[in-house]
Amino acid sequence: MKKADNDARDGLHKETFRDGKLSAVGRHSNGRKTGVWKFYFRNGLLRATGKLSGGQLDGLWKWYRENGKLYDVGKFVNGEKRGDWKYYDKRGKLIRTKKL
Image (cartoon, rainbow, N blue to C red; front, side, top):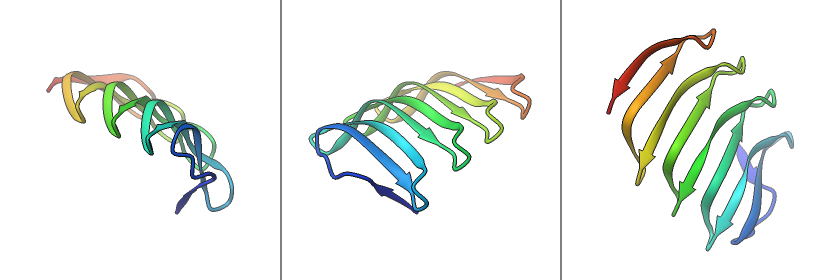
């Protein structure tokens, strides 16, 4: 489905769909995803953005729907959901908050 357009173990890293469209962009350190990453739908709109640390989700993450509206927002600590998570309907309106 996806392929990396480079095999860099350190520095800027891009991933593409088979058709060449960008699917993800971020940085690698020692072969692991680190820092802020952005993931995209095939239509080019943002799918998710957030920080990775040691290959795990860490800090604030935002996920979006294919229409560009927010889907959910929350924080990760060492790859696990923590704190208040906000969930949105398909129009981007906040529908609930859940404490994890």
